[in-house]
Structures are given as C-alpha cells and as structure tokens.
Length: 477
Image 1: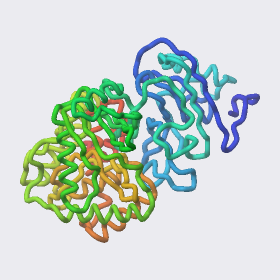
Image 2: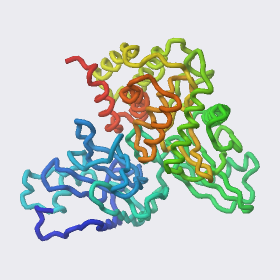
Image 3: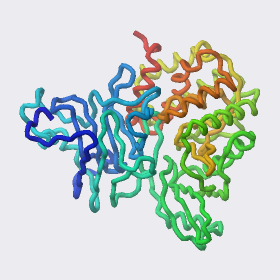
Image 4: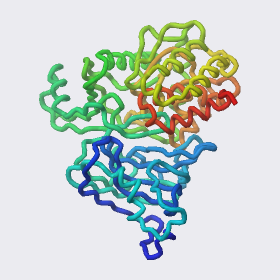
C-alpha cells in the first residue's frame, strides 16, 4: 500500500494466510473478522475482504460496480470459478471489478494520515470483529488481478480452509450468491433417524455433508455395498415440502425431455435422491440442455397460468392459483405477493412499492402475450447437476405453468459459466421468443429478486439495488 511504505508487497499470484485463533464478544450472526485488502487507507476506497462471521460461515465481500451503481456484495465460499482469462461470469455478460465502498470499509482520515493497516482496522471496524470461534480457522486465498479464486477451484468446499465451525450451506439470493446456515443445522443423527424410519439405516459406510439449499441439509450417503444416494433433511419447514419437490421432479421428467434424479424415498423430513455428479459446463452439454429445455417448454402447454397446488420457492410458499390472465398472474402471484412478507416490508420503501405497482399496471406493455408452459421455476446454475455422461440434470424445482421466459430469466440474471451463452443461442433457434426477449429479462427476474428480499430483508442489499435499478423508470420524479 502506498500509505505504508515499509509494509510488505504482494505480487501477482501471491498468497495471504490469516490465522484467526480466538474472537469473543457480540454473538451477531453478521459479525466479521479476517482479512481486508484496500486500494488505500482512505475512507471509501476499493476493497475486498475474506472473513469469518458469527453465524454465516466463511465469506468473501467486495465492492462491485453494477450498471451505474456502486454496491457492496456478499459472495459464497464456493467462488471457485475458472482462472482470469476464462471470462467467468460474476455479473451478466462479464466479470467483476473491485471498486467503491461497502459496510466493512474502515473509516480513516482522508489521505491516510500515515496510518497502518492495523490502525485502520480499529475504530469503526473493531466493532464488527466479534465472532465466537472454537479452534483455529485458516483462510488461504489465491490473489489474481480482477478475480478471487481459492486453490483447487471447482470443488464444493473452500480449498485451503480448515475450521471447526459448523459447515455452511449454499443459499441462492438471485445474483447475490451467499452462504448461510439453515435455522437449525441438522447433524447426521437426524439423517440416520430419518433413514431408519424407512428401513435404510443399516450398512451405512460413510455420510458426508454437501453444500445444500436454504431450506435443507444435504448429505452424500454411501453404503457398504458401494451404493450411494443424496439425502435431504429439514428441521423446520412445511410437511409437504419434499413431496411437492418430488412431484415437481416427476412433472419435469414426464415431459420426456428433461433429466431429473430418481426419487428413492420421500417423507415429511427426508428426500432421498439418486446421487449425481457436478454440472458439466462444456459447450456441448449446454447446447444439449438448450434442446432439452426447449423441448420441455414446447411439450406441455396449458390454457391457464398456475398449478393444481401451491409450491415453494425457498422457504416461502409459491402461490399457484389458477388464473386466465397472464399479466394478472405474474403481477399478483409472482411480484406483488412478496410485499406482505415481513422482511420485504423492512427492506422496501413506500416509493419502492409504488414503483412496483406502476410496473405491474404496465406489464401488458412490457411483456407480450405468450403461452403458459410447464416451467422449472428456479432454473439457476445451482439447481443444475449432471448425469455421469455429462447430461445436465435439473433439481429443486418450483414448477408451474407460466411464461417460458421466466426460466430463461433465472439463468440470464444469475452468475453462470461462459459456455452457457450457447444455451441461449441454441434455445432461441429451437424455441424463439418474441422479439426483444433479452430486454425483458430484468423485468421477469424481479420475481427472484423480490423472493430473495422477502427471505432476507435488508441483508439482501445487492438484490435490493437491482430491483431499484429495474424499477427506475417507474419512480415518480
């Protein structure tokens, strides 16, 4: 750093290891301690940080520039993208840059005042260093210009991290991909008890926790005979949650076009699925998936929008009331329905609500008439795995009959690998959308962003910023 002339220098490809041995104080789930790298010691300068939190595992935070906005953003420990030069999509259409300010940027006098990194972490930042950690946590990160990448990229866990903290689980918040703990983290005793209820607890050789979703713990179970399965358990959710998920998988497979994992067993607390492999991100696999998805969207069409029963998007109920009017369905059951959730009431202002209502009133001008087709409903890359041969396979659906472009918007609006561009090119050849489909993606993606805000409130700050960007023309000046 220029303000610390005698300090160490980190060259290209260098490594920093931070050893966090003990922290005491506040029990806040968002307390933070670890490493912050800043462009300078001036308040508000660009930064990136890697740290342990009180209740949300190991995190990376940095400041990114999204459109004309400068925002702080949380990212998951699974930020294992290809190396720079591979064009990894952290934002739609490109990578990310470190710039701007965020809630952990130290407050120090302008110009630095000859301060040091140590003093910069005092004062404002000191109030945030309050995490109870048992044992020792090492955070090792490979630094390269323009991208963070942990060693051994591609694995499910953060390479180079050893911790006695409880394992973290993936939570999808639109483009904001964070990692969080379920409200009640289950140990494998709960899993084994659920397996015992269905007669599958004998002969288990190994159980390994996997990165799961916002509502469940996911485990890879291996039996002594070499067979394996993925078990999902949940402690506090609706009793029909897993059965609804299993029914959705069956509906998608029933199109004859989409691959889904076999459902081996389902109860109120357990969903046992065929174990598959990580998603194959080759161009060929994405092209084949475009054919699968286009075929599914063409195969099953309804004269109404909705579904025979409500479903779930995350922990929240997805309202699927049958509706003849397509714009009314999307406005009432995919956008406005989230405004009454308490976290959304905390995060959204009266101006935000009025702007959303104005957008909904103009949906017939923004979205052309399109048929109601069977959609996956939560089609982001985190819900795509692969068959051993590489065929992309869908998991965790939130099915309904609605516009096919709702599925497209989920992929379009979230972080995705470069090869997925082939998906959109091939899909549009096989099942063309009305003209201007790409311009409609932000409007359709409001559903996912509002769902994130309805789950996490003001903590989903990046999604909140994107909502306001999309609603920009609908605020009263």
